[in-house]
Image (cartoon, rainbow, N blue to C red; front, side, top):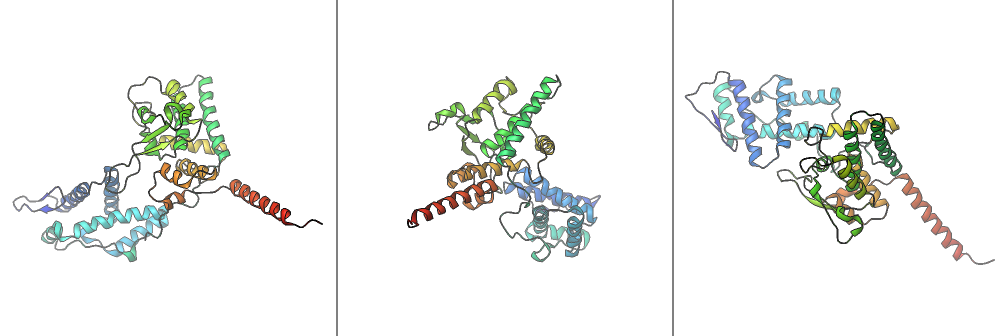
Length: 365
């Protein structure tokens, strides 16, 4: 039995299978992987989907050609009640499994003939609209997630700087990762970056903006690893520097933190590779706990804060949309949180205008 590069299975009658069930499942997964590769999906997308299927098989201890809708409902009922999986995570699991069962039950790929010949049955689609989570809206994030207020951001950045100073003053190791993480938090906010965009930045990704010479050599940030659509490469974009303090952060980090290290990576790890998300997230969570911040703040909150604060400060929504790399304004609207301070100030200004107009129109006594 062989699986070609697009996932079709070819039977080799002269080769017996020592462990037919395990071999067929392994070949099914390989064929499905090949089909996804032929669709130009990224490995970061394919690998978790394969693990979802493997986990489903291990939990049920039932082969794919024996799956039933009832098994689907029991499995995801457990995930919801025990592991408290979010709606978006649940859909990701089910989407992967639905795609896999569509592949193995499609006669064009030949798995029905293989299973009929070896096991006397054939695989079928068991994931339907009536037993899986539906995609009801564009945004499926948790309601508790929110941006930082400007005061919280200032406290966070000051706390991160103080941590670096404390480590240096104590003569302890660890000043470099603390300094690097402090700079990463500030740059993530400065350009509204996702973590994967942030970690892939290089020193050559910055350039002058002739329309804003005040920023010097850091007027534009070229984001090369922007979020991609399914089956597409990373989407690059240019983000214009908007905050006057951003070049100072970059200059100081490159001169005194990163130093003359080999390679072009702006934020290398201690071992020279790229920083992993858990490293920065662990430090951020510790800082938030030490500052007594409430739940709902995470790394992505820096990106939320960037969009929110620009809009609050009166920047054009189209400009913010382009900076964020969104094709549609409705996507940027998801990030448009308006703080209580801003709303109160806007309300106060509107009331002041109303009172002033009323006074001007009131006839003299």
